[in-house]
Structures are given as C-alpha cells and as structure tokens.
Length: 181
Image (cartoon, rainbow, N blue to C red):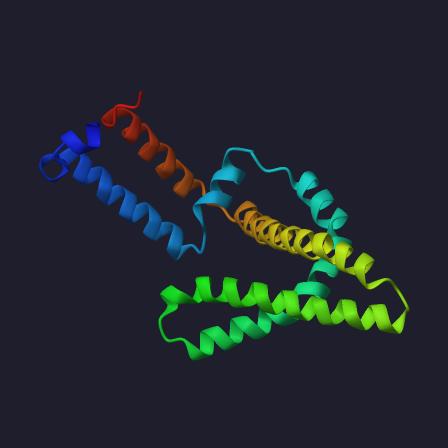
C-alpha cells in the first residue's frame, strides 16, 4: 500500500536511495561479486564444513546423475541454443524436449542393461523411474551448491569491506525511509 500511495518521482530521498542501489550493484559487478555470496560471507551464514560434507557425500549420486542425464541434456541444450534465435523460449523448450530426451535415453539404457545382463525389464524400469529423476535433482542442487561455494571462497579471499559497509548503510537507509510492518 505504501509503495502504491507514495509518489517516488517527487521524493528526493527515495531517488537518492535508488541511485545508491544502482551504484552498489555496479560496484558488485565491477568486482565480479554477487550479492548472495557476499551476504553469506559477511554475515557469517556460511558453513564451509557443511558445504564440503554435502559436496563430498553426494558426489557418488552426482556421478550417477551425470551418467543418466548429462548426454541428453547437453545435446538438447546445444541444439536449442544454436537453432532458436529468441532466448526467451530457450528454457521452456529445453525443459520439455530435455525431459523427453532423458526419458528416451534412459529407456534405451534400461533395455540395453536388461538384455545384456538378463535382468528384469520391469524392475529396471521401476528403479529408473525413481533413480533418474532423483539423481537429476541431486545433481542440479549439488552443482548450484558447488558454484555458490566457489563464489563464497572468492569473496572470503578478497577484501570487500568497503562494499559491505555501503550495503549496511543502504539497509539502514531503507529501514529509515520505507515503513515495514
């Protein structure tokens, strides 16, 4: 309600705050830093040991996830990005076509293993219905955690105290200017 009722264009303090925001994010960009890793490191919300246990502990599942999902994923990704000009459609097409490609790829793998090793096709199919999606989710989340862990390591090695001070000052200014219930 406050944002809808306030005329931001005529409020010099809010315009000044907006300019500080723009400068802050430009400084982050110039230093090659993102907000989330900076925030987690400066507020001591990072648990390096917990990250390492997660990354090492789930690595075997990630290897399974890569074996079951990576080949169709990378082929579809390259195909879509090279054939479609409008990036706005990439994610939805990659998701839809990728899901079908992963399904077909794993169905062929299941057929192959069932014939070669004389295993029950239905048991392999049942296992595949759980292992393939679960390993894909674990692999995606593991990869996100690894990227964030690397970014936080970069932040921890760099002196970014001037950015943190500006961040804290902006937060105080927000608390002063914007009524939060």
